[in-house]
Image (tube, rainbow, N blue to C red; front, side, top):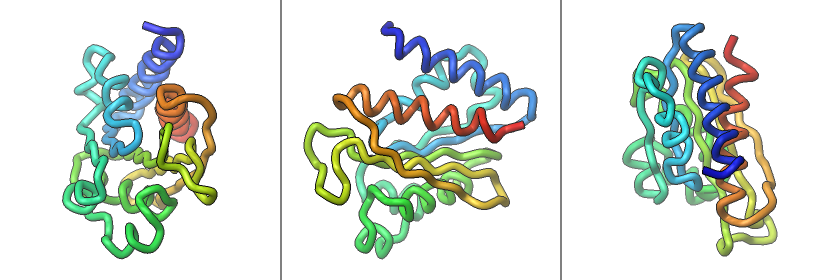
Length: 164
């Protein structure tokens, strides 16, 4: 296991502890990370006490079917967008028992980037049931693995910052 992977597991442990203390559950929707957030979370023994489920919605069709992301949103803004990430979070909360949701969508590379959305562009959305959904845009650097790991780390760190 690399140092970065160890760091992800440590973040997952911290997040799990915080969720247990708050008596809350988490669910996630992943596109560009393809299940890495769920893998980090389920690396922790007993994570079923605070981790409800994951939606791996790599294709646009999966985003629509599993998370109710609107086709108009995908056509107008693209899968890698603020709007799509926000709808993904809302879809996670609508289709789970979670109190908190994280959603990530981005371009991990090495191809697929454009001038407007270069490789490393990632949108991370998060929200709590019944509250406003938030989203941030990032431009991570490095190779595909590095971009995906940076996305996972930042997504988990977000929740550590906001769950009290």
